[in-house]
Image 1 (cartoon, helix red, strand yellow):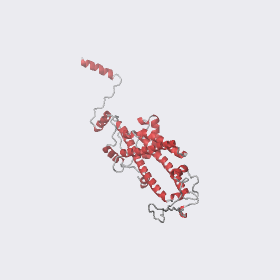
Image 2: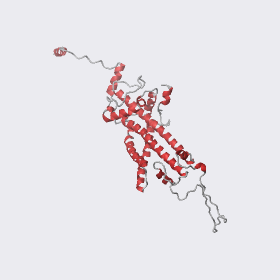
Image 3: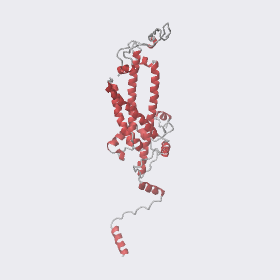
Image 4: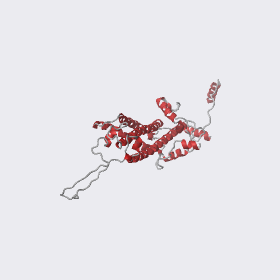
Length: 348
């Protein structure tokens, strides 16, 4: 593989945080996805309190409920290592990450516009952006009771002696010209002091999300390759990861059990999106797959019988040369009848 190909290829983690197996990392990633989608339920419950939601916010909460049900259906198959369900989980995890990125970008832009309007000359007008009015109301930027940026308290002449008269003086200091703008803009909102910390937190959380995506994809890639190895071992053909072919066989091919019907068509469609990643053979694949086998994370469930001992044993004996002699060729013509007559005479 060339240097350019190595730099552009999708990273393939071999462990989760160098401490746990990929299956454990996939389970933790799925658990975090479940907790994230549960928030959609609380968002819909907020409607009962009379909270006004924009169409974009309402669509996000409805999508979260649908995504929660999909994850609940697919999550148990992480342990059963079903190739179709694991591939569907990985595909949905990536798609959900893209959808969440779009929602995050839309809401972040709206929030920065609301923040910019608060420090602009158009303070108090309708908040810009999708769902901006809801954010403005929740953040306390719409018609606040007091609109000051600095409060100074000074005691009166009596210096606050108990029982005596004292005075408290408050003063409001307007924003400096450098922090205000004629009209709200995205750049002005981003440059506010409280925006920097928000951007840092969002970037850190998305870095974790990207790593979890890579872990889930790498585990599902491992499951598919193990499934193909099992199919090849159950037949009379040996499967080797180091064979010259650039791709392993598609586990959802029409001649495999997983390739039948609608499930097979969906599986082939998901594989076709990134065929080089799912089925591509690379140096080192057999090493870390053997490590996963040694760790026990790729052990098949006890309930399902996936091996055919008779076929495997006959193939082993045939290759070692210790198998039974080959069967006699079938008799043709009248040889069979002559042989039976001769056996009857000898028996007499």
